[in-house]
Length: 419
Image 1: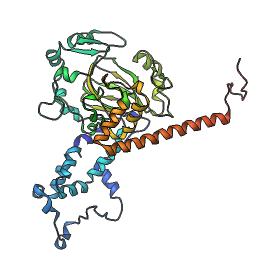
Image 2 (image 1 turned 180 degrees about the vertical axis):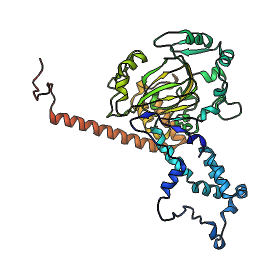
Image 3 (image 1 turned 60 degrees about the horizontal axis):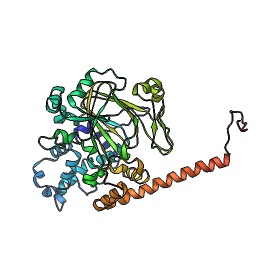
Image 4 (image 1 turned 90 degrees about the horizontal axis):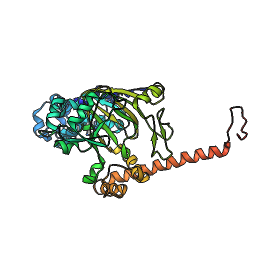
C-alpha cells in the first residue's frame, strides 16, 4: 500500500474511525487455523516438481525479481499504479492478490467515503506547498484579481487587508478560477503545481467535461476568517488541503433522523440556512453544546495536510492562523445516488453550472449513461431505494401522529386547547 495511506488520522469525535494497517488486516484474514486456498490455485514452491507450469514463466521482467523483493516493491506503489501493474501479466495479478492489497484497497474505497479523515503526506510533495510563500505569491500574482466574498481584489490589496484588519468576521478570498488566472498545471506531470490525492481521484462529474459545475477553489484568509455551517454543493464530497496556516473544523453527519448542528436552523426544503452572523458568535453561544452533541467530530488540519469532507456533512471552518488552502469537490461512486437525488429533486438549489445548462440532472444521466452505463444503473437503483425508504419513514411518522392524535399540553396529560 502506498506510504501516504499509512499516515492517516481522524478528527476527534464521540467515536474514532480506525484505519487498520496491512499487517492487522492480513492477520484477521488468515485468522483461521486452516490454510486458505489461493483464488488462483497458486501453491508453495515445494510443489514445483510436480507442477505442469511455473507462474514465473508468465512474469515478464518481473521474473528477474525474487518474490520477497517484488512484494516490497508493490507495497510502495500507489493504488492506481498497483491496479495497472496487476493487469500486465498473470504473475503480477497473482502477486498483488497474494499481498491482499486489492482487498484492502477495495475496503478502503467502500469505507472512506462516509468518514472524515486527514492525510498527512500527499500535500507535502506538491510544488505549490514548497513554493507558495507570501513573497512568491505577491511577486508572481500581486496584480491579479481574485474574488473575496462578492468583490474582486488585486491579491496585493487583499493581502494588505488580511494583515491589518481587526474585523470580527474578516473577508474571505474564495476564487474558483485560480487555476486559469495563475496558469497552474494540475497533476503529477513535470511542472505540476498540485495534484489530486489518489483516493479522491474518482469524480463522476468528470463525464460532464466543460459542462461540469465549479469544482475547485483557492482559499486565502486571515486569522478568524472561515465558513459558517453549510453542506457542500450538489451533494458532493470535498477535500481541503492546507498549504499555509491551520484550520479548525467541526462537523456533523446529516440524515433524516438527525437535527442540524446547535444554533443552525434549516427551512423545510433545506434551501435556507439560518445561523449566527459570525463564526465568533456561534463559537461563544453554541460551541460547548455542539461538542456534546452525538455525532460531533472536530479537529485541526495543519499545514501540509488534507482533510476529507464526506457528502452531506455539516461543517464549520475557522482559520486559527493566516491560511492558504486549495479545495476541490467531487462525486465518488459511493455517493452517486446522493448526487442524482439532489440534481433531480432540488433543481432550485443546484449551483455552479453554466447558464446554458438548463437541466443538470438530465445532462448528468445522459453523459454518465454513455460512459458508465452499469454505474448509472446501479446509482438509479440505489436512488429509488433511498426514495422508498424516505416515503416509508414519512408514512410511519404520519401514522403515529394519527394514532396518537395531536394537541398542545403542559406535561400533565391535559391536551385542552390553549387560548
